[in-house]
Length: 116
Image 1 (cartoon, helix red, strand yellow):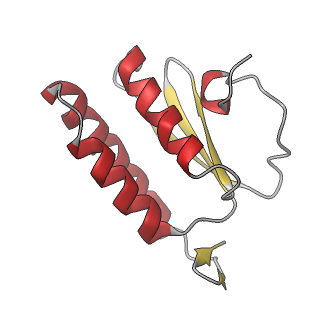
Image 2: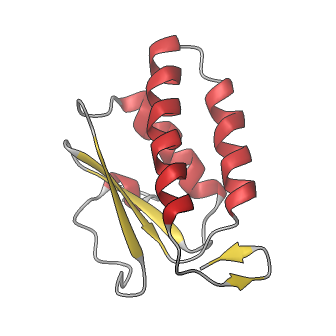
């Protein structure tokens, strides 16, 4: 069984009623290495109020709360470590789009460092 919800788009382990869904259209299905990087980021921030689901057409990001600065820094660091320049470029574009969408969410509160 997988440790990550990103692997299982049909998972019903988490009640998503309190989450904001951000769906990012994919130009093509994510390859194995891109999925693995997303899983690594999800694991790094386990229990931090968000998770990913991946299908062939979208990367779904379910957001309840997030330390946005820490998340953005971790994503940037992980992307910088990617050796394959195409994967690096694609994930950089994908996460830039996600960061823009998160930044546009106006109805959030602050709880410690976390935006909800």
